[in-house]
Image (cartoon, rainbow, N blue to C red; front, side, top):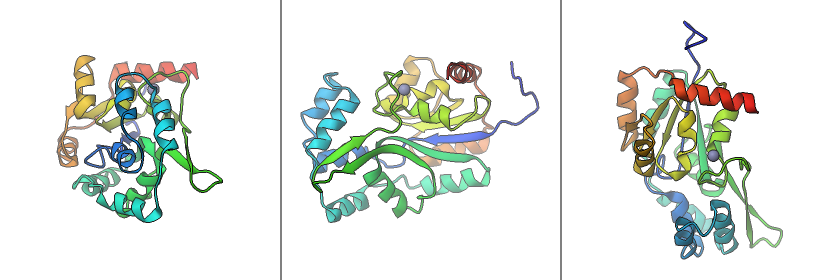
Length: 239
Ligand SMILES: [Zn+2]
């Protein structure tokens, strides 16, 4: 039952970064380029580490220069239709933010490159230590109550930046997106996230590029999903 009959909900778009805004997983590529990615990543996928432990491990080996970082960021391909998608969202007067379990150091630079630095981006941080050589990962949105495949929990950001009666559109591709889709009304999923939604009976739209998302949103008015709204209310009361 809708308690706010006749009142249009505020629509908020939450969008993943790695493999969603960028075509490939730029987080994996970042550690593959600047750290000892393997065997740590395989160990993570085999469940030997938590995501937080994995990030602590690969960050401890991190070695990069400003120039190399710039070259890396310049080489990360962004979805060709992401700019058009931003224009579409602005035209609808929807709010949008980026939710990522990746790191500020490359995400902020890539967003600057594509003139999208004004979109609020919630991500982890890599802090350069006082020796000016070693790096420490910081997880500002970690949620000890949640055991999802994330160092920071994206649900915590989604719920923290919305009201239970708002309408949530979620766009993602990976395991770190599986937690927030339970709280979202309209879901665009590809890759592992699409498989997860299929396994858990979560209605979603498959997508390959932001062009597909724009086409669906032009044709279909987003509507609230009762079960997601109930989950948001439950979480809101528990806070
Ligand atoms: Zn979570």
